[in-house]
View 1 (cartoon, helix red, strand yellow):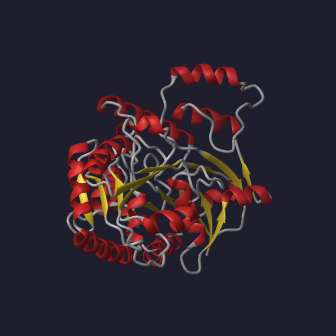
View 2 (cartoon, rainbow, N blue to C red; view 1 turned 120 degrees about the horizontal axis):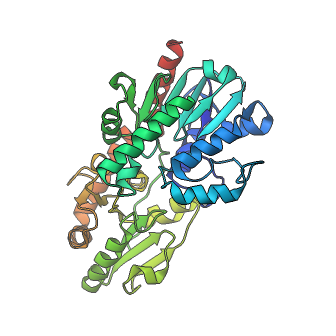
Length: 395
């Protein structure tokens, strides 16, 4: 089953969750599924970009910047008008519209995270739309835009994309055979936005299953925060809570893998290791194996990939009681949940796991068990392949 995968992919150290999902799909595809990534198809000429001016305008309207792969300056569309209009139009959700034509010789199209406008042979193929983060309501959760204004923005963007024939997992799903979301939280958001219930499929993101070994005891307990956006991931509350914990327990350690200046923590760096960024392979090799507890007390979160990665290594988690995190962390079974931006509650949760090695071990074993049942690539790929098969059967 040759499947055109239209999804974000930056082959660099500066990647985000959507790039990781693309990596996971490409390296661990469902059985008998061969992915053809759209960037590879563009390079070999079987796929081409279409309607550059429309792509530029639509992306400007959506979020005030050109889509990925579209040059900043086009003939008759110089940067100056772009900059001026960008000041007038507020930012939109971070989505890059891909306008594509050609015939890469595939059976199915899976558009993940990217809205797509398909022409020619592509417009006749079965289409599956999906989202990786699950937080389709970015204008509310991430940007904090008031409800009334958020509804106006979403309604206007919906009208625009439908008029342009852009397929979108939230705004325009008429042609899609299925809309795949990674959580019940995302499913509820899509239902509220008007996506037909019969099209929605909950398929967890599938991760590789690492071999694990007990951490060699060294007299310390190590907490770890992995997140590209330090402040959104609750980094300030983590720093404040850990500073208190370290005064009480000098053997406590905190590793932060994020782009953040030391002075931004606002606390002494005693017991804290800051790592600006690491390739994901290095995080798997060096960070998670030496971790005792994963932290993700995010202020806004769509999914919570580092929690699942920690689960794969048999680590308990402390996370915010928001969004899909409430589905990933089972309270008192695989970890603890706290309110977002609540350093006092976070401190108490960290102290509890710090002082109770038996509880950490029990939660870690249950976290690994649930990972293997719900999040391992082998388990989730069976569901994803069934979605593909149904889409092909519907044509």
